[in-house]
Length: 254
Image (tube, rainbow, N blue to C red; front, side, top):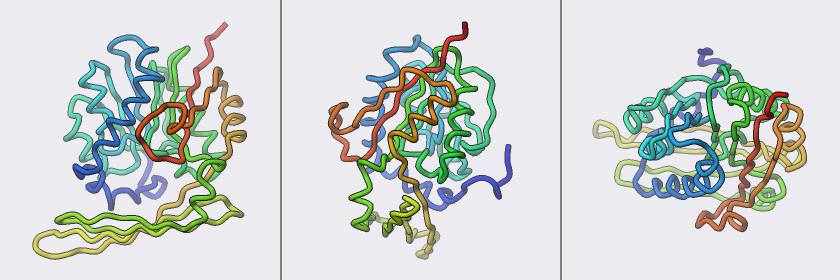
C-alpha cells in the first residue's frame, strides 16, 4: 500500500455525500450498461475488479448477482463506507496509477469517470497497464470517461451545481482551462455534526482526453477489440452525461 502523500485523498471529505438516497439510483443505471457490455460475456460467479470503487454501491449490486468482487480506491473514507455496504467484497486502499496485482480477474470496471482524475496521458497509460496485468487472458475492461469531444463545450460554460439535504449542503463551482484541457471543480460542503455546521473546501481536477489518445494508450498496453459507446445515445440509458464507455479485451497469448 502506498502512502497518503502519493494517493489522491480529496474524496475523503465528501465520501458520505455519495450515499445520500437521492443519488443512489445512478448506480442502478450504471449497472444497466455493465450488464449489457460485460456481465453477459463473463462466466457466472466471475471475479470482477472495481477500480475506483467509491462507497461500494456497484460492488454491493454485483455481489447480489453472485459475482466475486474486489474494489480499489484511494480514499480511506470511501472504503470505510464501502465495507459497510458490501461486507463480502475485498477492498484495497491504493491508487489507480500505482497498484500492482497478478492476473486474477475476468473483468475490470471503472465507473463515475474515475480515470479523468488522472491528469496526464503518461499516468493514464500506467493505469491501463496495471489493469491489463490484473486481468486474466481474454478478460474484459470497461470504463466510463469524459471525452474532450463530448464535454468540452459544457465545461467551458463554467456551470455550477450542488445540493441541499437535512444535514448536508454543498456547492460545486466549475472552471475549465482549454490549454491544459483540465476542468476544476471547487466544492464547498457544510455538514451538521454534533450540533454544529462544519465547513470543508476541496478542489478536484479532471482531464478531458480525446478519443484518439485514449485508443492509442489502450493499444500500446496491448488491449484489443476496443469499442466506444456514447452512454446517452448508443446505450439508451436514462443518464444525462458527456461521458463515453470504452470496452476492450486483454489479448490471448499465442
